[in-house]
Image 1: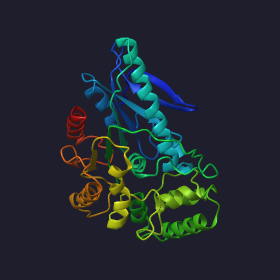
Image 2 (image 1 turned 120 degrees about the vertical axis):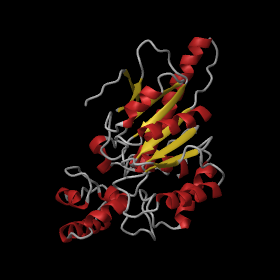
Image 3 (image 1 turned 30 degrees about the vertical axis):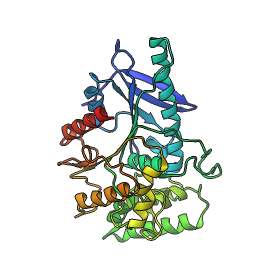
Length: 333
């Protein structure tokens, strides 16, 4: 059933917008949850975002859904580096927006509201990349337009459905010689061609990536990460076979980076159709928790967990669990 929800569309940077879910005649709220979807996602494509907006109606929080350059079909020529710079621009915009409102109401310098970033699926990769990568990123305009912007600190961070794109691709090519051949051709293309070259479009759909979308050599290499687990690419953050050393470089950097004021929440869907077969989700999350806390105690034990019965995007079962734990977390932030 089609759903609608009122709100405000904000132009937070050139060619970039975010939609704030908000009821009419309701005063601007001081605190903000910024939501980032996964590959192919855009406005209203993740079913529980609408339910979060309803759950926040009687709180001091509003939810913004970001449209990045990589939203919808833009993921194929995007990168995590570009995503997190755009997320940083949105954090800065929303913080100033809320401060300006409180200044107008109070007639004095506005107090800073809280800002939490939340990612679904590949949006989870964005969240972890935001928190552990160098700040600012090294400039790389020849590849993806990264300008080396300084990312602002956030108060909280949530990752929902953090699964491995690499292992999802490998599950597709198992048992299919046609898919295996397509994969090998794409790996060779990405290894030998310039980063911005577009992969043969007739091949990418055969390995489980969304079909009919232009995919650059750099993004395919990053998602497929063919040299993992020894040399994981940028997008390979959640594979079950990554070494403890790799987790220390990612989860273990969260506290040290200084970009997260409070704690990190991880919500893994209990029946995620993109998770590797037979994966022990609790054990996997325990490894992530160890690495996170080894770098400084930032894992949120109270809100993190496996969402019972939930599909990848928590379409039906598990929404109540997700929202209850989310509200609990925001109340403590």
